[in-house]
Picture (tube, rainbow, N blue to C red):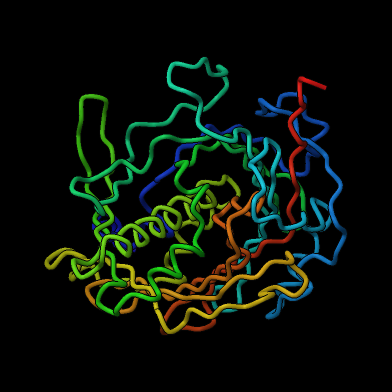
Length: 373
């Protein structure tokens, strides 16, 4: 791809560009079992909790069930869905990732584990090994009178990346905005879907800013002027979740070789001349008519009602990428990736070029010990 286009194209915030999360990466050779590595990046040991057994991803079509079968050895079963569940350290979710690019498939697995249930209190001591939030990238929401930094406060997650055969590839400590863990996509999408068509659009601006602490990228989410205060807030909730969680996976070491390929595969990118002389106007539009409630959106998945809905990324007013979601309420441990149990991104002109993400299993962390007992 033309280097100038790479610098100017702002479709990248979703699949290949603006880093909205930061990582502290400790990469180790492939085919090493987690238990055999005493030097792994870990500040809280994993908690093994039995869950309801089930056949993972048996409902998946288009070859995904076979592609994700090795994931059963990493984590299987789904934790019972409880709408009023509290977040716990050790809550975990396993996702399968597949990039299909004209017949070429690439498969990876990601195990996300909660290392904190809430941001530490101001002034509280933090473990030295806790990743520090980088200052070069900020995500702002403009649904209020003034832009608000949606990247603070933040919490720490552990992300383990696995290859297609289930072999451990790497382990990261990642930071995620707390807003992205407590709202979920379903509630925001339902509000936006009920809004008038003109109010379901959100602009996305990406600016590079040079500051005393170095360069940083600012990403601003701008709800349509026609949106009510409620719809504008919901649009920004949706945007914060989308950009934050997609970046969790994008920053995984196991996807480094697929980042540029992912963007090229599923995004219909403007020409280099268009980017150079006209710039790029990016926006995200939710399809209200696509919002359909489902009492059991994943027959072999969590026993929870949810919904299906879709959105489109527009570049200069043209559809550049279509995305679809299946989501349930973001009750722990389903709050990891905002309640999403299925996500697909598809090139609007090449239906055989897709990026698919599926929830394969979940685990509840151990309940806190009551000191009074």
